[in-house]
Image (cartoon, rainbow, N blue to C red; front, side, top):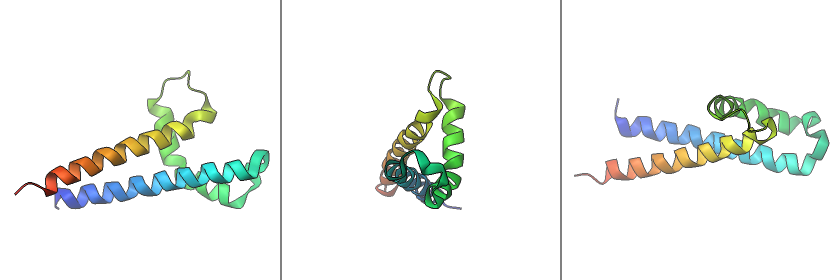
Length: 94
């Protein structure tokens, strides 16, 4: 399997996680305290659970649980940037 293909798949997965985290944040802003009763928020929470679990795993314990989604979004963003740079460097080589 070509490395560029694998990197593009990883980039797509990171994009899905990032947009789901962004959507979850927007729904949380509109839903307020009753966000756990909102169907769309629950769906986003299911989609983003692997990213938030990974963020909780690698983040220090002093980071509060309510900030883990923000940490997961920041990680997804920087992984996405790294994948774009890697793909660009691989595709420009002769």
